[in-house]
Image (cartoon, rainbow, N blue to C red; front, top):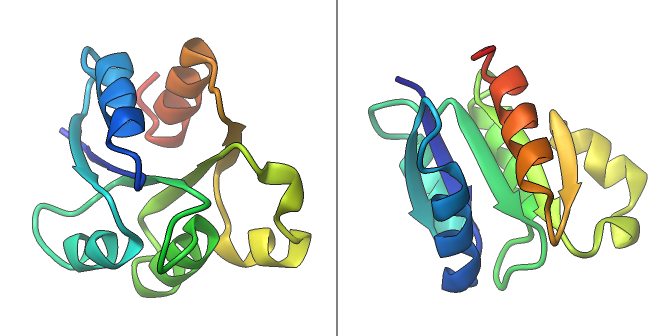
Length: 121
């Protein structure tokens, strides 16, 4: 079963995402920082998909996804942010997300994107 890592500095957002995704065909792990997410990416079992918020202290979601892409290219990436219009296009391209979803997200759209990204359909 694939493992999805949710990254957001707001524990309420992580709880909401966990509730939204709890019946899906993958395991869910959470962390509240980009640095911890990078640590987790280096461990087993491998992470199939990282879904990260953008605005976080210490490391933005785009920075996290860019580092994840360089170190773990087979790990898929999705950016989730309330500030998508503020992200420079070249930085977003470097991060290479499979998708960018705005906050607040649409549950159905997010689930569909995850299923497609993980080839679960």
